[in-house]
Image (cartoon, rainbow, N blue to C red; front, side, top):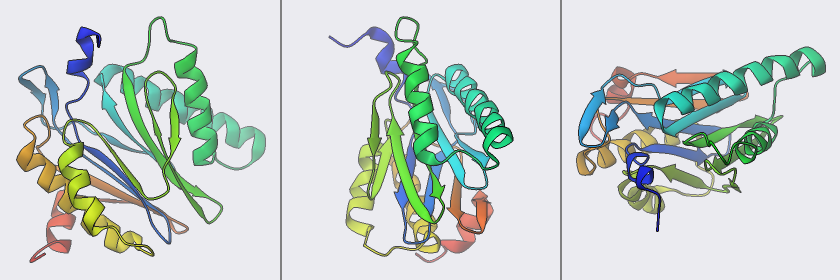
Length: 211
């Protein structure tokens, strides 16, 4: 039987996509507590460095603490090594942290994506420390079934980040229409060799107009 708290940790939609020139991640902005909409301006997409981004799902406080931890670890790594963490290193580090906190776990599901050199890397990471490398795309949260239903059909080999930004925005919109725990806006980010670029709802509306 699943623990009772699990039912409160699914309310969101976050997405990660592997592209020919980088990674695209995105998420909605609604935070829920059971049937209550607790906040409509909750950031679930974060820049860790120019080459690295993350999404959060689960307990907001725990997820935000994980972001603080990985940002601090990235700065320490840059001081020692002269370069930021790779997505694989960030995923491995968080896996160790989650493994070490099984008795009092961080209730956070994360998507970690970015570039290692010019190599796009995407990982999904559950709160028990399980890491899965994703070769195409992934989605986490209560709206993920709706989002994946669209992405599964729309994704194609050689997809560019420009194309994927539009695809992820549309997938999030579909999830928000079907899932009451997802909503209140979208944040989508693209990570390429040019760096980390974030798109507002207004940007996305212009990009997806008529699509």
